[in-house]
Structure formats: C-alpha cells, structure tokens
Amino acid sequence: MASRYQNNETKKLNDGREVFKSKIYPKIPKSDSDIYIVTQGGDRLDSIAYQFYENSSLWWIIASANNIHDAPFALPEGTELRVPMNYVSITQNFNK
Image (cartoon, rainbow, N blue to C red):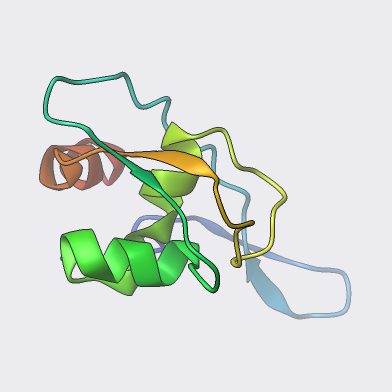
C-alpha cells in the first residue's frame, strides 16, 4: 500500500527547510459496503484503520469519510463512525 505522502509535492521554506505542501483529501462518497461502528473508550483513528484495513497509516480515510479534520487521534466513547471498505480504490484514486 502506498504512503499518502508518495505523490505530495514539497516546497522550500525561507529558512531552507523542505516541507510537504498541503494536500486536500478526497470527498469519500457513501457506499453499500461501508461499515458503521460505535467507538469504545481508547479507540483511535489509527487503531481502527489497522483493525479494518491492516494499515494504521490509512486513518485519514476514516477521518475524511466522517468529516474529522482537526480532532486528536483519540475519539470520544460512543462516536458513530463510517468506515469505508473500498479503501483500495480510494487510495488508488487519491495517489493518481
């Protein structure tokens, strides 16, 4: 599985550091294959991604599908989340 940074452009800052440019994540439409879960205490986006995708770096798919943009990795207990199961096609389309 490709890194989400694989095709990110970089830019050089005035102080000489090179950083990744911001990337807009795709809007992920609902699908019949989506799974809905309710979080339990201690659940995090990366651990949920690992549970469903066997890849914790794909946390951004769950975050994007649920319009989570500035939240910490830890989620409040009882949060309902949509987990898109077509993650392979999402990552393929995102990395084009």
